[in-house]
Length: 293
Image 1 (cartoon, rainbow, N blue to C red):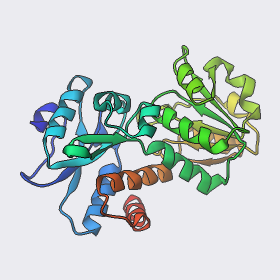
Image 2: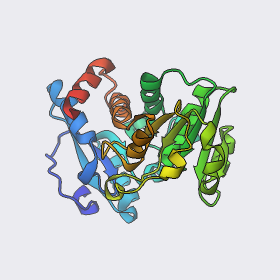
Image 3: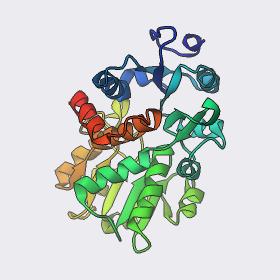
């Protein structure tokens, strides 16, 4: 039973179709239920998305239960289980997700089994491009090596092209092999000073600055002061709206955005995977933007 595997209370009506976002504590901060439920309400459906707070020890058991429960039509996976979900799904993931090694979207596929994909990378490119323009031949510094960082790195590597460069920042060589697999460079955090003055964009894909760490920044003010005034700053975190990293960037006078638009875009893309009969993504985005405002 689902309720026995999670750490928060939900109210499921027997027989109703439902969605969920799985994570360590999505009931505290995840925006997906608000966005998805607004879309379902807009189309006059009773389907709902619920946050499911689950511990690591129960995560695979919960996936097994949801795979078996045909009323569960899909949903989202958030921190820190995106890579765990990909491993559990095995071959039932899209080529993009397999390359990234992380899943943030679950949907019903062949024989009604759960399948997975990753909408983080595509959404990050949409958000960056809509705010800063074309990034062909750009040099982009990506902070972090987790699931989001891998998704963003893979998609940005394709966008900057052979004349551009992606550099991933990690610790203890974590992410070094992945960087090599997408033809990106890898450096240790201690080397950031060496290259940061020459990049066209910096993307924070770590959780540093998120809610319980909102007084922290992945880069110091000294490091931010080395960034070119022409560079763009993108923090994929959307809560708080202004992270410490963005505050430092604003103090420096740099163009910057948070992860709010990316969060909407990935939600729209994921919603369409789970509900493929709804083809008007523009309408869904309008509904979700209104719900988020």
